[in-house]
Length: 120
Image 1 (spheres, rainbow, N blue to C red):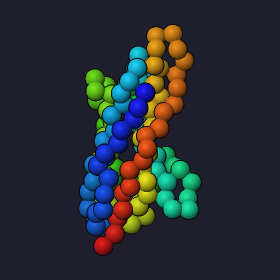
Image 2 (image 1 turned 180 degrees about the horizontal axis):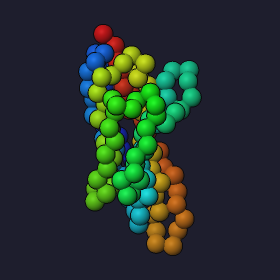
Image 3 (image 1 turned 90 degrees about the horizontal axis):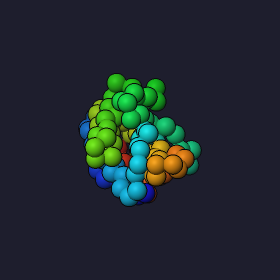
């Protein structure tokens, strides 16, 4: 299973970006996908997650500004980021909990990361 992210870049404070992450490979069931981020010198932290059933969870720091959405048919997750702040600057990683085969257990997968920089 591979996760491929896109959509990062440089944006001014108050601006918007949309991240995408597509999972490919052997996927029997995609239980949940989400986004984490890691700022320079910091630890990786949860941004938002969405389950196969559509239940979402957000970090307090992004509530009301970020929206996560999933497309189960495409095994893709999106993160719409509005009202971006300099403190949102980080490498954003896609995460997925996938059952690759019918009788396999669930595995956790990570993308390679995409840089988001919020600066004037």
